[in-house]
Length: 122
Image (cartoon, rainbow, N blue to C red; front, top):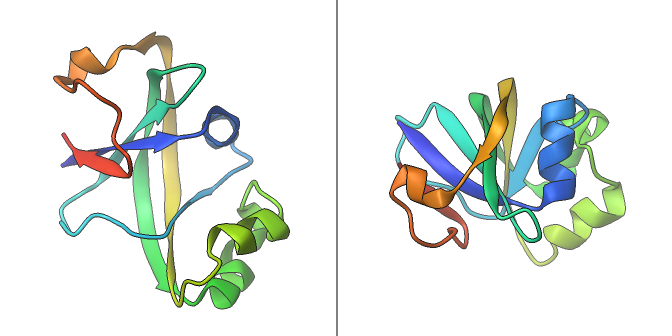
């Protein structure tokens, strides 16, 4: 099963460059059979630019989550802590292997009309 995630272009680019090895989320999909994340780079790109295989998901208190993943976060600690402000727990999706598409794709290729606010099953 694949899931479509909207990710800001600056962070999506870091995933495919290899400097961001975790994608952080305040909430996550419920299905346990999701193995692949399809990456929709939000405004101004507004296209699907690649996908990555999930290497695991950590669900933890944000401070502990940072201790475990911060070295490969691809973002600053301040930005991370601000993102998880007022949250007791957060998620870190580990990027196992990433594939950047040669040609970015429109959402309709995936039979999706609008980018997901959080995620969408494909």
